[in-house]
Length: 550
Image 1 (tube, rainbow, N blue to C red):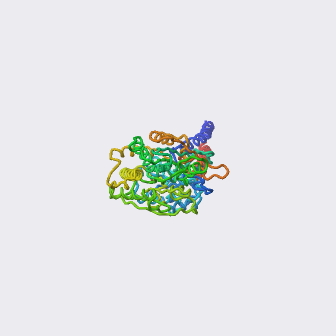
Image 2 (cartoon, rainbow, N blue to C red; image 1 turned 135 degrees about the horizontal axis):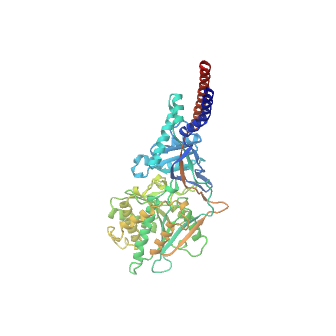
Image 3 (tube, rainbow, N blue to C red; image 1 turned 90 degrees about the horizontal axis):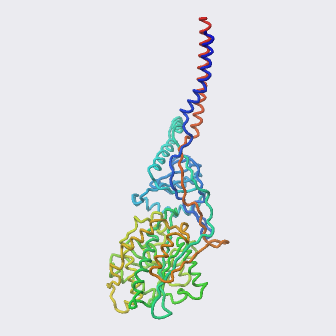
C-alpha cells in the first residue's frame, strides 16, 4: 500500500513540475512588446543647393527612446521638448552618436513664451547648417506622446542614481519604448519641377509703354518642410500681390482710369532656394526670347516680402535711385503716403550692395539687379538675416491682419500715384485713391487663412498641387495672359536637389530592457533549483518515513 502511494506521489511531482513551470512563465513573463502609440513625425530639411548639402541625411529610425538628460545617448532616440531644447543639448546628442533626435512641439505655438519661440527661431539656421547623418524629426505633442515622454524621462533620470543596486532594480522593472519609423531611407527626387506664375495688365496709349513688375515668392521655409506655413514670409507678400492685382484690374477695366503703364505680376517658386524660379524666368525672358516686357522699358521691379507685422516699412535697394527716375518717384510716393495717411508707420530706405561671394542672395530684387534691372524689395524687416524669414514659428497666429491691411493700402496708393503721376499734377498726399471699401480686410484675411492652411515648402508643391492651381485660378480672374514657368534642375550639375521621406509615421512600442530578460532567466533558474531541491527533499522524507515506520 505504501509502495503504491509512493509511486503516485512521485508521478504527481513529475507532472506538476513542468505544469507549474509553464504556469509560472505565463504569469510572470509579459509580452515582449506591444504597440503603445502611433503618431506622425516630420523630418528635418534635407536638400542640396549649389553643391552644398544641408540638414539631416538619414530617415530610418529603430532604436530605444531616451530623454536628452540621460548620461548615455549612443544609439538611442533622444526625445526633447521644445521648452527644454538648446543647441548645446542637440550637439551633445550628435557627439554621442545618437540614433535619432525627436523634438516635441506644442500643438498651439501661441502658448509658448515668446523668448523660447525667439530662441528656437534663431537656432533653426544653425540646425540646418550642421549636416548630420542622425535622423532628426519633429512631432506635435498629444496626451499619449507626453505620457511616453514622461515615462522615458523617469527611466532616463534613474541612470544618475547614487546606488548601483537602485539603478539595476529600476532598469529591470521600468518600461522602455522602442521608436520605429515606417518609411524607407530617403532618396533624391528626380525631375522635380518648381512652378512660377505670370500675368499682366496691359497699359493704354501706345506700344512702348513703361512696365512695372510686381513680384512675390509664394513658397515657405523652415527647419521641417511639413511644418513650414510661412504666414508672414511670404504669405503676406503673396496676399498683397493678389490684392494689388484685384485693385488695379478694376482701375484698368475703365477707359478713364486705364493708365499708360504695363503691370506685370509674377509669383515665383523656389524663392527660399536662392530664388530659382525668378532666375529661370529672367533667363527665359532676357536670353531665350525676342519679345518680352522685361526687354523693353522697365520702370522698376517691386518685390514684396514679409509685410504682415510691425509698424516699420523698409525699401531695400542695391543702388540708391537717381532723382528723376521712376524708382525715385516710387520712393518719394511711399514717403508721401506714409507721412500723410499713416503717420504711425515708420518708413525708411535700406541700402545694401549685392554680395556675389555669398552662397545665397539676400533679397529677391538682387536677382533683377544682377541683370541690370532697377529693382527693390519692400519688407517690414530691416535685415535679410532676420530669423523670421526661415522659421516654422512663422504661423497664422503671429501674423497681424491690421498691419497687412495698412501696408497693402500704402503700397497700392504709392503705385497709383506713380502710375497716374499725381504729385506732378499737384495732388496732395492726403488724397486716398483706394477707399476703405476697395481694400477689403476680409479679402486679405481669407487669403492669408488659405495660404497658411497647409505647408508651402517648395519640396511639397509640384506643378499639380492645389496651391499652384488655386493661385493660377486667382490670377486668371483679374489678369490677362496668365502662364506657368517651370524650373527643373540640370541633371548633370543640379543647382538644387530635393529628397523625399519628409513625413512619416512613427510607432512607439512598449518594451522591457535587455537586463529584464537576464533577471527573468535568473528567477526561472532559481525557481527550478528550489523546486528540484523541494522534490528531492520530499522524496528523502518519504523514504525516511518508510524506513522508520514500516
